[in-house]
Image (cartoon, rainbow, N blue to C red; front, side):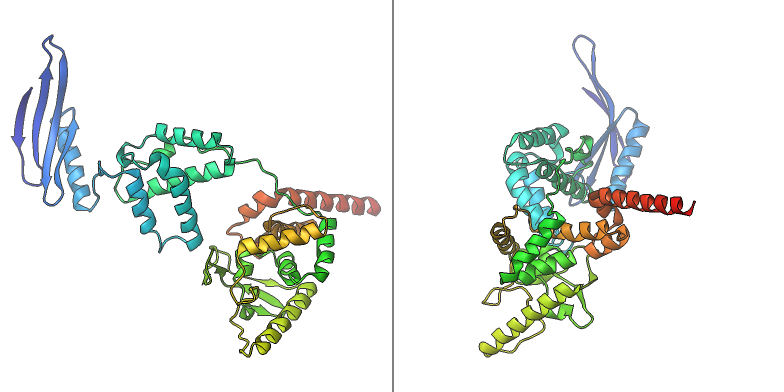
Length: 384
């Protein structure tokens, strides 16, 4: 190999022509290398076909280094980057989101990709990961898609941090969305559930959910100071931290005020009187900044407890099992079926944007529009 070097100024580095020829005359290498030494970072090289191209490429690299854009770390593994990403995301992500990302990394991503150098992570690695997850009978399509989403976010943050130059997750199509139907209670089943609650000590929990459409974590995070039984209305200011005993900010865009129907007001008033009587019996003050739905020892009610309570009530009433979230769906579908505007229902649900509501409940608004058209048709025919 012959090399012709040209020393440049300190900032521009040095250049040399790299030329190698095989014994049979074939040209093995014919390119220019630009090299620069940066104190504290090391030596860096760029390669190009001509000296001018190498000079421009090296100048760009020097500008990036001076701007604090670090070159990709060849030794950093996917697992090490995931640890760094999660450890530095506490201020940016909600607690429950961070917990969900951490679980997904621990259970699905790290075992398959953790030892691979981040700079060598390829689309083929990700395809194999997703194919393996798709074949796992314990996982559904929603989980597989979520695994891809978490990895894409993590690698995207690595690009912004200058640890890799591109997000290889974007080179493949994401897994398809699951075509799952939401299991809902029919209006008759909802009425049967309400009737069955008359003899249940958990009537208030389920009635409040049906009457307000709050998320389960928002119900669990309610304080009495969030409820005005005289107005009457309920304000969502926080949600219960998953697995904890503290309140955290609700999902983005979820702060809202919801009016309370008479059935919910009556149930909440009775529930509050019992809470005040219990405080009096235990010789402790009743405070407004205390949990609405709590255990006997004062701890807030977690999501799995609310789910188990609902299942017991459904079984006693001879009704099918549904997720606790089905009560939120019952709230939305009841309003939409009665002709309520989709935008207003979206605000009451605390959805971040109208598109989310339309994706879930759009078929009901189509039905409402059809009914409105039919009513107009009847009115016009009577006018003839």
